[in-house]
Image (tube, rainbow, N blue to C red; front, top):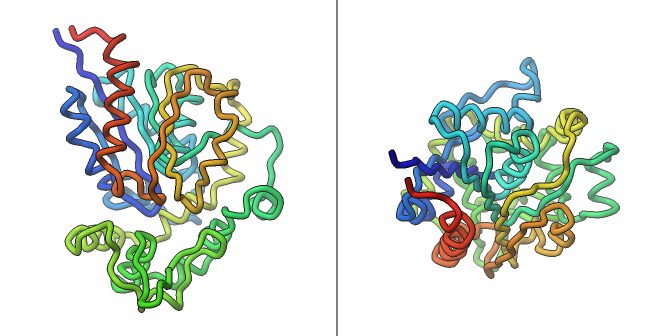
Length: 303
């Protein structure tokens, strides 16, 4: 009886399962069953309101547990796991919470940060170590959620996040500042999505608004508390990390030292912005295919 090799791919922010659209057929061509869910608060999932619900619903432990349950529901006892952006942060944690579940890991743009021994507020992180995370201070606050509510506003916001530019090169988002509300109405269309694709994203985000997706940025203390129970910080499986060399938020330099925690790390890169999966799909797919052929299929029986 043939084994079913399963690959689960996890999206980031502000994205949907559709963010992996250029990779799905490539993975299927390798004989994999590919599963790409919308994460909590996005698209057609639930989007619990916090409060009264607990912020833990948007935490990485809950996400890791959900991914394990999804795999079990599919009858997959071991999976290939991939993640981009927040999805990358989540899949690293899946390997820590459920190490028996993942045989091979793929992350795009997202460096690995091991669990911390001491909680550090985001304000301190931004001020002392990672100034390019300043946008997260805005996202976890009330302004973006309060100002982006209508479908037209959601469309302008997503168009900005996906690289729309104004007549004089204006942008609608800066890693150092966050969403630049004043520029949103003047931006031209993003070159990364067709009008039909952008409309799909808008319709999906309009189901629940931005409350759910933005809650992921409000979970740092929740995630720290959950991780107190973790007994490991290393990931002892083959890992492919594809950096996006022009990403203004997840800088390639932030990945220095990952080998200290991931001994079987393979590094590749693509010269793109944050949206590597869309800007260079052939290169990304090629890196993934070559790596899986070398590390997974060579060691995994076909029957």
